[in-house]
Amino acid sequence: MSVDPVALWDAEAPAFDEAPDHGLLDADVRAAWRDLLLGVLPPAPADVVDLGCGTGTLAVLLAEQGYAVHALDFSPAMVSLACAKLADAPRRVRDLVTVRDGDAAEPGLAPASADVVLCRHVLWAMPDPAAALANWIELLAPAGVLILVEGRWHTGVGLTAAECVRLVGQLRHDVQLQTLDDPSYWGGPTTDERYLIVSRR
Ligand SMILES: C[S@@+](CC[C@H](N)C(=O)[O-])C[C@H]1O[C@@H](n2cnc3c(N)ncnc32)[C@H](O)[C@@H]1O
Image (cartoon, rainbow, N blue to C red; front, side, top):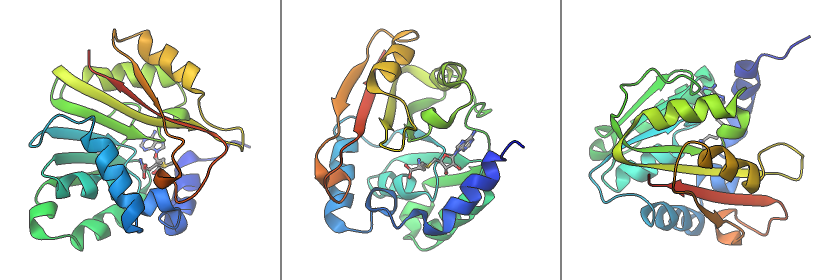
């Protein structure tokens, strides 16, 4: 019997933000992600597409810094929590974010319309990661930046950094890999492979 991925993610939604890197509820963990992303994003204002946005944590974090964020997720429960998070945010943040239900594999957004495509912990979940990546790269404006946060977790799921570099390298000239082994991103030490990939051309 096949498992419905939307139902699986819906089931994850209520407790999703309890992981330090998901909810970014701890000020130090939040600051670590803010600084990491600001270090690789173009200066605000810029248009960011956040695919597989989950509960909208990164969308709100980036809007707080002045980025316009178009976020989507295929899990109604995740989208609902993202909308609730947004509703609690200050107006200047709310006005910069849109959240909608959609398939990250085929986002259906205008080609060459985004300054940044950001996907954290989503590529590994795509049925065809290479095809999804090609669709994401099409969304980028000529000087657009692809930002992926991925991992290969101790549970055995995920993508190794080598696999991810290979996938991006098939489509882009520039592939920068940064290991994210600093506990400040995760609320404590980790033993699995976690990393950031940035591609600028
Ligand atoms: C591990 S969570 C990451 C959430 C968010 N990016 C973050 O870092 O907090 C993966 C998210 O991707 C979403 N997702 C998985 N496959 C998707 C697809 N095909 N289309 C849209 N969203 C998808 C899930 O619903 C879930 O919210």
